[in-house]
Image (cartoon, rainbow, N blue to C red; front, top):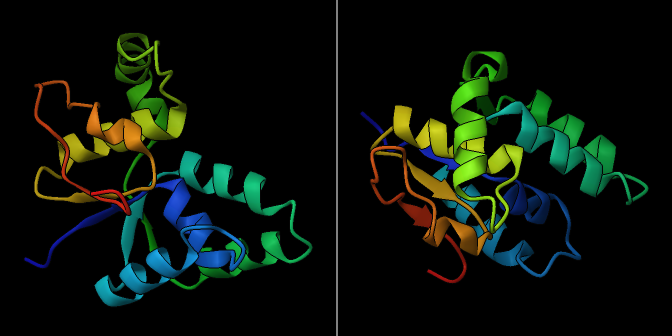
Length: 139
């Protein structure tokens, strides 16, 4: 079975935005690892929001979504209670919706690596207290 990668918002935005400080890092790793990347709708929504500030940002994210590079393996409504539990547990950070969804995805894909630019993943644990594998510019 090929390795699985869970994609967070930061690397997705960085991949599509040459002005992002992590653009080269993200581009290198996403191209090297190859698609598809597993993610969730909140990641895509965040990316649309951030990239909408650029004149072509929304087009870039829409094109990326349509390319087959992303695989959605999560239905938000099926996980409302565990999401709230995680957000409550990490309320001091605080944990956003996309991060909570990715932590739950990491539970469903225990061998997967989360590609992120978010240092909070050094703190996050699955609900069974397992450390989450990450690939990050600081790891």
